Every structure is written in structure tokens, then in C-alpha cells.
Image (cartoon, rainbow, N blue to C red; front, side, top):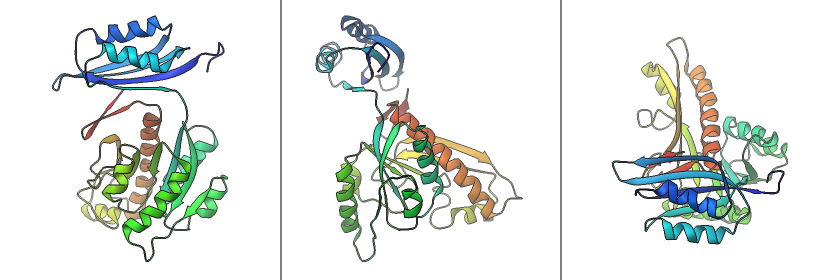
Length: 282
């Protein structure tokens, strides 16, 4: 909210492309006395599809604005209108601390457009660390439980917080399709970019053995295909033969936390559209 008491909103639209869409949308803003402060659009010419993200301020009836937009836009238009706000999130972790630590520090200093409601882990190792930030920590062991049984307990805990997004900050468990479907396009994961070349355990040992010249990280939404969901952010850094597996892993951890933070900023700022298995970022 600004000094005049106006609310700030974000509008995301994607629909079949047509002439005059920007003019029609901006006209509706004007009709409702709204001030556009940021706007970006993109046309996927190959598929004839239009994407637009706008930030604006003012007083309005959101229901009426959406009704007017639907009457003006092509059929099957996707319209998301929301007041700008910090997103409620739950983090899932295992034993690695680097991504978790980075997000907790950003959250503590209000440098994360989100409220971290809780941290859930299948190991107890990070509990004391999380408690230093006065955030609830839930240890949910997977021992002697089928995957679906463990996920049910995890989901029961998640449901209590009703988050808008889940963040897998190095959560080293494969999620079932049922769990993923429950949070479609709302689970963000981070992993090293060696996949599929270096799958399985100790990817940095494998990378060192192959003499790789660059390492990287990928942040993506989770779907039913392991590590094949829509990509949000990717980054790489150069390495050389003088670095051993331990040094590669350290560089990998550094780039993973940076890539995850960049991806979450885009997601939490409502800048990411998911189209089939890719993203459009405005």
C-alpha cells in the first residue's frame, strides 16, 4: 500500500493472440481509475499465444475488473489478479544446509518476498539450526513407512499451514505423482545441472572423474517426471582440473543457493507463467 492508501496489484494474463489486446486491457485499467506502474508482454508467434504481466495501483472491485477483462479477451483466457503480497511457503529439507541457510538468512533480513511458515525434514539434523530463527521445525521420519504413507504424514503437516508454495531446499526424496498433483506448479526444486550425465550418488565425484570444465544448477517446478519439470533459472560457473571433488561440491553449493534464490524471487513476484513444460518469465 502506498502513502495515498492505494493497493498494489499484479495481473497475469495469457490467451490466444489477437489484435489490440494491450489496448483493451489498458483501457479497462483506465476505466476503473487504475494506474499502471509496470507492464511487459510477450507473443509466442509460433503458437499464437499472448502473455502479459502488469503491476498497477488504485482502489477497485477485483471481481468487476476480472469480469470486464473476460468480456474483452478471447475465450479460454487465463486471468490471475492478486494484491501484491508476501507468499506463504513451507520448506522441505533433508540434511544439506546451504540452501536452507541462505533462505533463512534472507527471510530474517526481510530480503525474501515470502513468509517461511515452517521447515519439514525427514531427518532431525537441521532442527537446532532452524530453531535459531524461531521457525517451526517438523521432523517426520520415513523409517518403516511406505513412500505414500510418509507423504501423507508430511502433507497433513503442510495442510496445517496452508502454504501457497513448497520449496524443496535439497529435499532428497522422490515425490509421488499424487503428491505433486496436489501442488501442481507450486513446488520449486533445486538440483545440480549434471543430470542426466551424472545421476545417482556423489555427482561431484563423478564430475571430477570426468574432468568437467563447468558446473551449474537448475531451479524448476516439480512435475511427475523426475527433474524434468519447467525450468525457472539455470546458471553455470567455470571449474578446472586443479579442483578436487570437495572443491567442486563447494562451488556447486554456492551456485545452487544463488539459483534457488533467483528463481524464488521470480516466482514470488508473480513473474512466471507455465506453458506445457516450459516457463515464460516477464
